[in-house]
Image 1 (tube, one colour):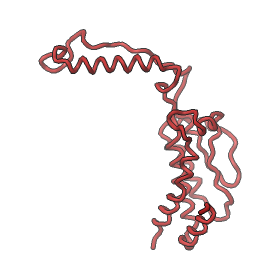
Image 2 (cartoon, helix red, strand yellow):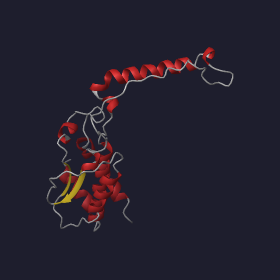
Image 3 (cartoon, one colour):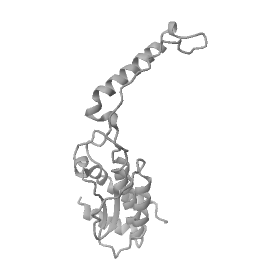
Image 4 (tube, one colour):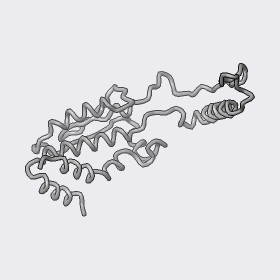
Length: 190
């Protein structure tokens, strides 16, 4: 069954509530894409592999030491000098803050936005809130709802550059559109 046939079927089910169904579907799609968007995690970067491995080994040794009763005081705390207090710093670049990609999802009608936002949004709440506000203005006179991220590395992230989203964000989320449509139709008043 093609996507266009599914749209015809949902229009029949929606009976006059097409705008509401499309709004709810678009908001769910936007939320899925934003939530799947990776936020920079220096621990996963190849440049930090040695430091991450070292820090994990220190943590493992400390757990092992805590499991040895000889290392614990009567109150259950680690005895002085038994805890390893060492780590390697992770490098993330000057002034790096994760969340720029997630903060750059934008929504428009009929014409794609071409600029980037200067927004850091690691949780994605601002992107989802702003996008949802735009989508609430949808009417059947709108031809296209655009959801875009204009960061220069957006395409690389979509096509496997991130270990956090190896299958992308948009490609995975669009596979769920029919579920979003069904949910929106099921939530309509009877």
